[in-house]
Amino acid sequence: MPQPGPAEVLVRVKVCGVCRTDLHVIEGELPPRKSPVIPGHQIVGVVEKLGPGATRFRPRARVGIPWLHSADRTCEYCRAGAENLCDHPTFTGYTDDGGYAEFAVAPEDFVYPIPESFPDAQAAPLLCAGIIGFRCLRLSGIRPGGKLAFYGFGSAAHLAIQVARHWGVEVYACTRGVKHQQLACDLGAVWAGEATEAPPAKLDAAIIFAPAGELVPPALRALKKGGALVLGGIHMSPIPQFDYDVLYQERSIRSVANNTRQDGEDFLRVAAEIPIRTRVTLYPLREANRALNDLKSDRVNGAAVLDGAA
Ligand SMILES: [Zn+2]
Ligand SMILES: [Zn+2]
Image (cartoon, rainbow, N blue to C red; front, side, top):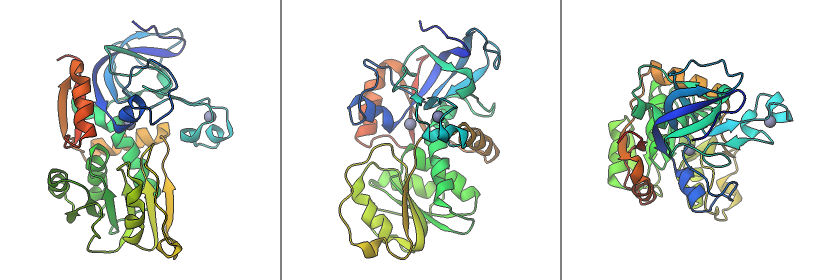
């Protein structure tokens, strides 16, 4: 049983979303920071115990613990409002134990209240897939009426498309597998095809969620002049060489790293307003490995969530 330190809360985990980053941690694509470590950073649960000086939540409050476990609040990035780029961050389920467990501990300032309208399992994928997808949308600069493509249509894209549609954006889904393409169309995509296929219109922006560097050149080729390509993953296979004219005409590429607390608060508010519907497959906590294997082999449509009570 972990114990909450100063200004921390102990949370009884109800459910924990499964994220591709968990696979990157477990399979060593991200360098180990704590070993062994309990993965999982989309935790929904209730406050079980307050650490010394913790005052933000009452016992039994329903809360969510996200990927950004803490930031130092003092480095140049934190002071500039970019705590997602903090020089000394900690991450749930990576540098600190996460939510594939009955209990987890987190600093109270980095924990979110969960909007009441979301049941536990539906709320979990909002905490990373949702928030990161939202940050990707923001950084893509997409505007109402614009054309946007998602490369890879998993947990993050199936939430981001709902925000994009709410904003009046036309969405194209470039993804492997008929089931993922069908889900995209069900959620309002105007077109769905293979990831390497050229969408039928030139795009204002594209977001790559798949960890596949080989998608960068085709995604750039799909952009209009001045279009933006956003890379949403924490890890990606090498990007192949491409000719400068693929990038020329003021096309841009940028990555997205982590999230600020403000991103999370803004997204959870928008998600409740829309309201976003998450497509969830539940697995008992003891079958975490089956959930991870299903994610790895593209067998999860929407988001996988571990159910601590099952
Ligand atoms: Zn910092
Ligand atoms: Zn994640």
